[in-house]
Image (cartoon, rainbow, N blue to C red; front, top):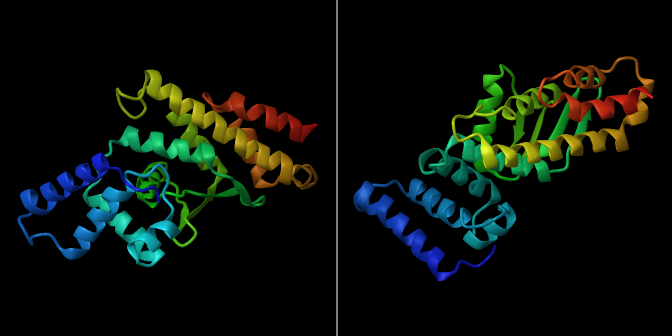
Length: 229
């Protein structure tokens, strides 16, 4: 973990005082909530969350780190929907995607930030779908068609409200494009020949449908052409 500077420490103390004294009254906050708040305030000052380093710093198990951060995300995080999704898309542009199943059309990736999962899960549920989250490894397994559908929606102006436009939308679209390219590169590098040889695996059907999506279809089409050649 990066050491905090004096300004960051001051910000943390101010927020702690507000929550622990002003909002709840001295002793009015449960110890578990105080632990979650303190951990969240420190972690929020970091550019990257590393549960192993945090567990060493705070002398608690990694599982408790993740549990406390999940609690803090619900109780103390004031992040707006569009801010959360900017962070999620930034993560998705940086992760390494793996093909979980050709037959089921599933992919696997590491979310890295447990505080973001509830936002991700809520959005997936709104699409009448599900994903599997493994807290220990921080990995998500889900159908590729669902994430393509999600990207297609997030590409649209004002999909997450009036703030989802201009520079914010440009940043989101740039990260979506990178993420789609990374998925395509993984498919082309690792499973291209299998896709060509298998008779209509679900993953290929997903790519065919994805190439027709109104917003991101053109980003998927080149991969489909490579598979069909």
